[in-house]
Length: 357
Ligand code: IPM
Ligand code: MG
Image (tube, rainbow, N blue to C red; front, side, top):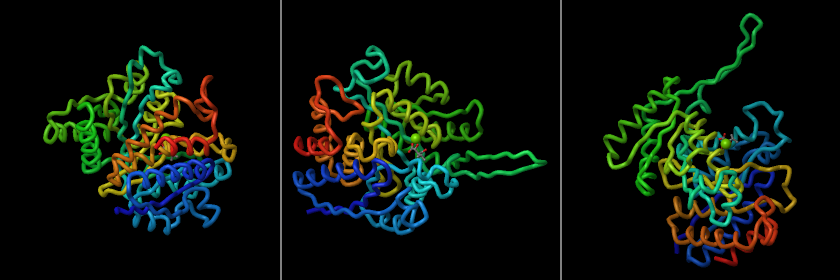
């Protein structure tokens, strides 16, 4: 029997509650589909700052490196908001992505049939269904560029720099093309090549990889401002979007909202090897932590992505996704609740998904 070792980074706010539900679902799936799972916890974010003084202890990096994959809840909260940049919970998140070499962030934005009414877009704009995959570069660009503050002649200023090398663009472009190949064969590369030099390099590199290695994929380019507009004007035109770290951060929030609830969307961060880091797109929602109101479905769907992309258990992944689609017909957490469905807590939602598996 295959046996997988998973590190849990529960994090802050609602993180522990939602990860607990995802673990329950993973255990149930492992019994049903006949594979073994072992879990160990490690510290990240505010929880790590409180316990050790730093947002990403070396021990956490070591454990994640040794594991088959990592499941993350969410990090951050008002308690740590006034700390300086380097020791904020967010620095732990960026640090673990970088330390594990997870340069490709996959953020699917899909509409669940039962939640169509929750999308802020009109029904005719959404059409029958919507399924966009945002591939975001995750370990380069302005997030990791040289930065600083300086005071010259009494005037204070600050700077951050965007830098991409050709190999960095090549490898994320390949992830985008491969994804498009498995889906509907269309890739849209998003940049700001009318202004930024780094974007001009990006665009030329993606075009060359497309021509040399993926002639069968339809490649288009959009400036990021136009893409932001097109996402709400006609989202159905998109299959896979590949873009830089910061543009991907912004566009993936926008794409996720089209689906109605950011509480539903999963993500995967992958590197050169099989292991990945899986997390919901939403944050730590400290305002509802401990109330039982959190929606665990994005974390449960992240666990399903882990089974598909890192653990080679696609049937279990599919079963979890089917169970989630089914549960939405009758039960909802507060964030997506509507008349005619039962309003359930985070824990009850986890139990329901298990019972449908
Ligand atoms: C995300 C988040 C993070 C990011 C923050 C919390 C550092 O917004 O995962 O999209 O900007 O990458
Ligand atoms: Mg973000």
